[in-house]
Amino acid sequence: MAVDMGAPVLVVDDYQTMIRIIRNLLKQLGFENIDEAADGQEALAKMKAKKYGLVISDWNMEPMTGYELLREVRSDENLKPTPFIMVTAESKTENVIAAKKAGVNNYIVKPFNAQTLKAKIASVLGDF
Image (cartoon, rainbow, N blue to C red; front, side, top):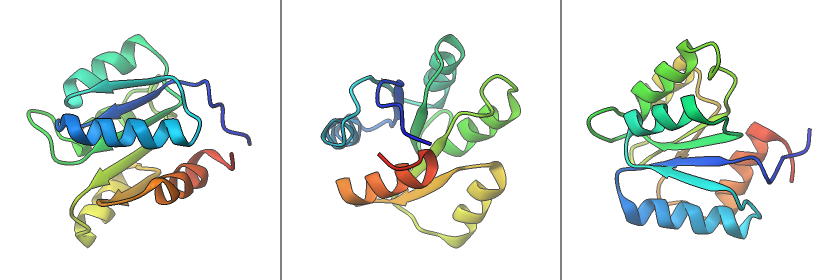
């Protein structure tokens, strides 16, 4: 399966600098259609209004965390198939297990580079 580089990607993070970093890395990888949301609630509203080819979400956000967003996405029949990558500064085993159980497609621990991001996206969406 080839990656649709034109499919919109949603980057969710409450830290504007992190959104900028991920957006720049995605652009380096060839993605052009990139939206952003500052928290899980905003992301969920955007996802209900538009179909995304990939969601890259931070774990730690207020008022709705990336983990809560993931659970909401996976419990919604329309959003359920959306590929979802979780980004976190913590590599706690229980977090990874919880995210896997909730249906995350992959997991990235900060800090990371374009190569890591590409590998994680490729493992979820296929080579590009």
